[in-house]
Length: 172
Image (tube, rainbow, N blue to C red; front, side, top):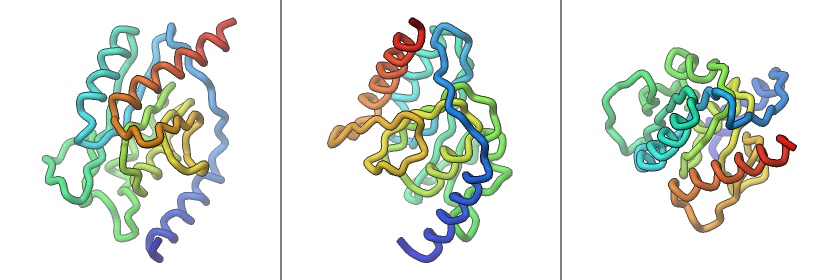
């Protein structure tokens, strides 16, 4: 990890310490506000989640994070390499709206974790965050370790499965 990245993560830790957040497990039966962070290769999994949550009457928002090799068109719900400052921190005008949305649930499908994914996940105002990380030091309230199976569709199905399990446990 280079100097710039160490600085960026140190700054992120300070911002996280200023937050006063307690995770709240969302109920699937209620009208949820769901957000998904994803990368371009995960579009079928995003559509799967969109269909699933739309059937449950949820409000669905997604945010695509392009990698340095992609050349996307500029959209309101996407982040490109040009939307990062010199330190690699996303510019507030690009991520501010998504991060401050009062989401009930934030799902992260991003297979390749990078600082932008960590930044948005960590500072999101979502009540409950689910994703996959190989490290124990993740920004998720529920970290699903999928091992060698890096398939986004598999992760999406696992996220729904574990969310349903949590709802069964808390609903009794």
